[in-house]
Length: 234
Image 1: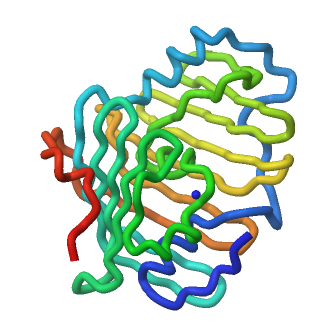
Image 2: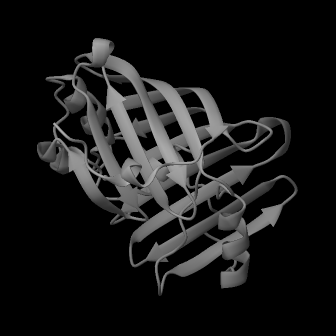
């Protein structure tokens, strides 16, 4: 992944940008309420279309803004199929460097340790910033449809929902909304290239309000050494 967004350092900025709960205003739903139930096989196919087929290294620059201040820097994300992710962020001249490894919906480690509480409690939005949809949890109610170059689908567990809208063609992209108890906690909008690689992403946090913009500088296939997934040595 209730935080008050106050940027005290570069690391605080990036993690507080991802620490989200509640909302002040909400856009319309991505998935119409009258959408029919979707079969698990359909959802598996829709999710699979977003998954990387090979390990990839993404390099990016980021900019966080809220009502009080802004901060930015550079970072990288290493993604290995099916569900492993390491991301590193830092400010100018390497200030405030931080790193984490996530497998599926869980963090394996985060460095520095005190950054854990500033991470979002749900890693769906983190994956979405890279253009990757997560599969549903067991027992979730599935809805959605595919029409033309647009596919939308929803996972619902009680009043908690995750919604995706994926488009292909000239305006390829993935939009993701996560709601808890019916309230929007975050919206990620990712523009994709013709090869499915992310070009730019925006995470909007209505409750702050705050915004995190990511511009991808490069995406390339990469083989990662086993130590890539180990905590940093100090």
